[in-house]
Length: 316
Image (cartoon, rainbow, N blue to C red):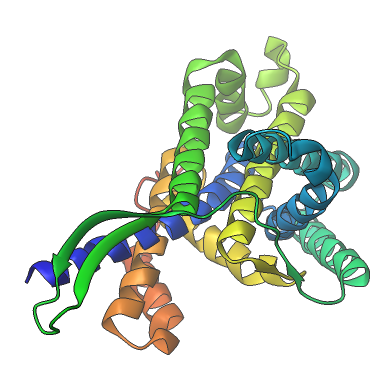
């Protein structure tokens, strides 16, 4: 009995790792939707660029950062990746999305899809083949608990966690808490929530709408870049197409949690990660996506606006 408990605990750690990455990407989707009621379909490709940016920075800066502790080198590269991808996201908003802010909604959707395809195509030209992500630190394995295997003499059942899993979970939680504090406790967060509530009245109150929206894209893209870096370290073979499937899964997580809700995106990301891992534990791995999407669709049937989403107020 205890060995089954340890096995489930081990899979729970794996689910936390997977859910942390999904939640970071979902936050980018939900931030943009909360401000502009627009889905940034290029966000998955910005996530992919985060992995490639980490690979390039690690290759270029290794001779410089080798004299520093590995954790410090990781933090430096993480901050640089977030800044680079964040600036790119803000630039895309300025060049591609802002001119279409008052255009029909379908125009913005097509532009977002076009931006994503452009990013993916350019990356494919530069990196036509899959690349290996360099290791930024030694992935030490820590044994949390060990017991003799009940059915195999001389064998044991252990509960382990790796240094990389600890880093992924801790970094993700720190970024999520920092974003939640920013949105709920700062003047920027108040301005962002005001734009989400009534974008036409806010400019009359002196709030710089364009600057707030650009900052929203910068933060959302930066979180997506951080997720790409963490994903690349966890699954160290990266490709230009990696943002498609993972990006769509994170978008689904944001919708299930309640699109436009910061905490809903986090909840949806962890829920999707848990469902995927448990689906592999209980069934064949080929049923993972089928089971995950079926369960999430079932949730939306009973909660159309997501677990933490709210129906929009309509003036009549």
